[in-house]
Image (cartoon, rainbow, N blue to C red; front, side, top):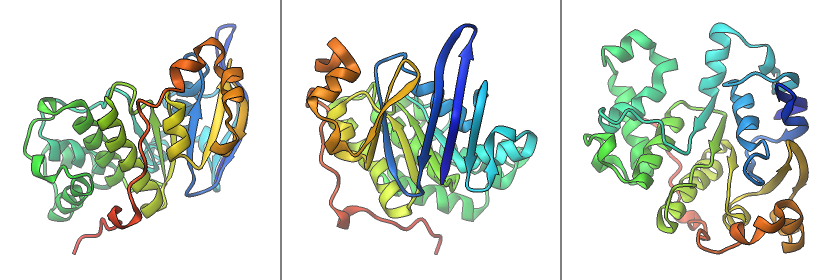
Amino acid sequence: MLRLEGVVKSFGDNRAVDQVSLEVPAGQMVGVIGRSGAGKSTLLRMINRLTDPSHGSIRFDEVDVTALRGRPLREWRARCAMIFQQFNLAGRLDVLTNVLMGRLNHVGTTQALLKLWSEDDRAIALSALDQFDMAGLAAQRADTLSGGQQQRVAIARALVQEPDLILADEPIASLDPRNTKVVMDALLRINKHFGITVICNLHSLDTARVYCDRLVGMAQGRVVFDDVPQALTDTVARELYGLDAGEVMDTAGTALPLPAQDLRPSLAVA
């Protein structure tokens, strides 16, 4: 269970996040929606501790995330994987090495720098790539891939961290409709078959409605909506987004989830 209590992030006199309190049960897929500048990205960065809260508490089960420093903080970031809009891959490295970087907390920095990966680590990374139909590109440089392919590599890298929680910050913002479906299907697979909690900032309300168990709407740093997708009516969306609602209620990014039989659960090494 992830618990946020009265979380605030101030930049000078501006409160980017203002008194946010949330509880996210394990295994839920949560879509965070709202206009640009609503505080969505800042919220996720605080959960991962890429930025520190000004006030309030963030806890995960018995761990006080806001109090972590040093190695315990690095261990938390391994348990709480981040996926970014711009992929954050090392473009000159091959796909497999980029995914193996997700194993850093398991093998250590020196071993990783010397590329002394074990056969088990390589097998885990290849298995993760295979989950997203990317194993055939393992030897290819990351900067030669399309945007959708790079985002799948980034998701595979997050998965091999063996996280309890994945935070995805606008993971489909720069993708076309086809790659939007591929990436959202990948996140859905992780959530439903590995039981990993996913919190995802999304721009398209139609995509959020299709994929998420729960939607959290933010405006001016505050949570103003928290309910199941069916409760997000067009009227509520217009209240949340104002004149911009039409831009986020189109169906360009809409995609149905993969059928259950296509979701392959196993990452285990034989």
